[in-house]
Length: 225
Image 1 (cartoon, helix red, strand yellow):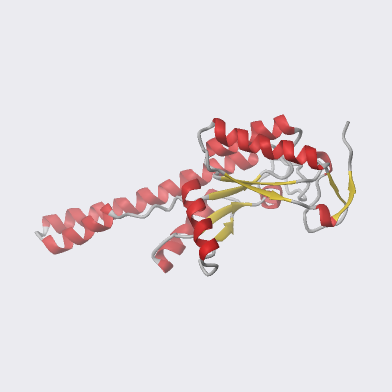
Image 2 (cartoon, rainbow, N blue to C red):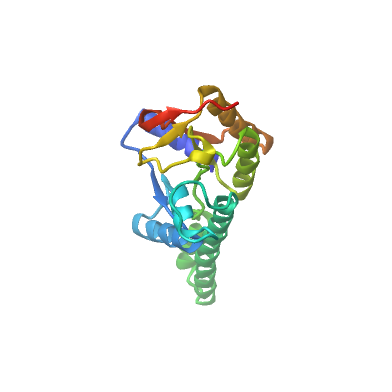
């Protein structure tokens, strides 16, 4: 999926009409139904991604109940959701392929060679429902080491892109609200490197990092000892 996303980024640089859409989701079934609907309507899942928003996870997936977007939900919630999404997307593949093989059996039984060839072509050129997933790692949920460990878990679950912001992890506020506290540049750089090291260690040389700054909306930069 990182290969797909990199190719889409290059295509957009060459022609900005070839934009991508990242659809928000908070449950495997929701992501599955979105991709099934997209494939039925457009005939392809090309340039369609899934985006795991931290605020959606906080509001709808936390063991503590509905929470504001302040990184108070469990660290492992996003990685669990990525894993759940891939399970549901593979299930969508299995369902569609199962129907195609049933139709192929019927065509062969009826000795309809033209129909059988048409269905076989559809099987051979099957397009998966599995698409790139962009996962929100908020402000890293701790220091650079914590960010690295959490990133590894998300990548292993299947995320090819990680979004991180330069707020202080334990002071994290919703990106649309005032009162944000940012970290010094050196601390944010350390977390970006932590994400990069996690990708490299897991063999994903072209993983994507969305490095977001909240500096313009922040009221304070906190110096950490």
